[in-house]
Image (cartoon, rainbow, N blue to C red; front, side, top):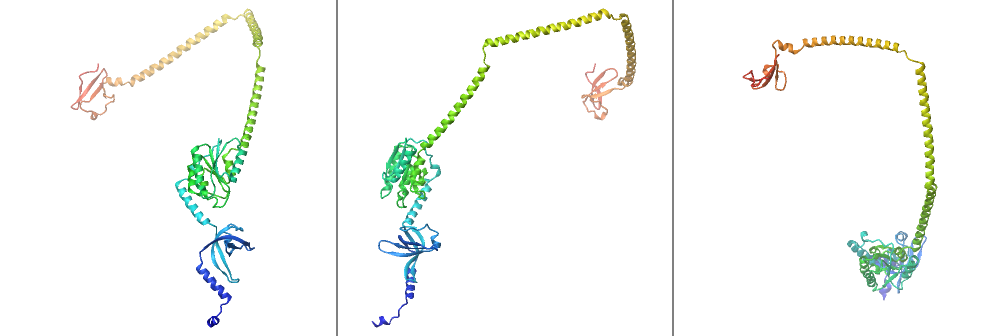
Length: 450
């Protein structure tokens, strides 16, 4: 008892410091989950809140630099935090200074989501070349969802508005719960096996990641990928992405959008038909007006054959009249010319004696000129013949010379060019002879030239 009273007392500061050291040393790196309550966002950007469960709570502080990396917290969020577990010494309050935040259970689910996504993507289940184009004019539309889901009512209302004439087939399945994934896979498989519809909508409304998890199950994803009918996925809201979205042929941000993508817009189709009808009507009217104008033009040019015959007869008569008048004019002109010539012959007879004298004089001059020209040409020819005779090779040959040529007709000028047995042709003043060279001398060949 005396030791108890003799022990030195710790100050409050020392106690809080010791507790802080113990907590930071032994409780580092822990994730703590709970519900956000008493949330306060200070003007500085820091967050202060309590994290509680059904039996306890702990104070938390998340400073501005950390808060900027995460989505804004809301009262009632179920989250998991990791940070420095310590004591705020000034007030002795146990608190967590938050460094990381995630939705409760999201870490485990997200890890499973990414792992399955990578495996299926490696198999090619999400490949773009597997995607099929939705039919432009489906005869039936199938829906896989829960009969009690609000999404079904939205989809049906959209289909009724856009295409009220297209039948809708429901393949019921739970979209949330323990057996929902198996039911969804069976419903998609049944739609594929029956082949009753041309396009299939797989849908449900929004929710948390846990609520939508059935559409991330491998059985559902594989059923959608293997479906023989083009599939439109409309799961959750625009920011929600499930593995079913990647496996489907087309992903819609909402169930309503999925219905709009699957069904043609009847109002838009009627509008296009009305526009096409208007264009067709305008084209027909234009063709009619054009044909009417061409008919009128042809009608104006068309006339009775008798009228055309009368016009041709009139034209023929005019041509005959002009031809007759022209003939009379030509005959008249020729008659007048003949009269002038006759008159000229009667009153202006030519002097035949004078003309005969002039003709004789011309003939005499022509004969004389011709004789002189011939004499000059003959004298020139005789001079050229004498000159040619003087330089003729025949005179040289007559003095005893001869011309020796080889078989190619070339003149041989050098005896050294001769070869034994070579044939030569020798031209004399009187006649010629072929010889052959033998022993360096030319001997007469067996056949002389005539």
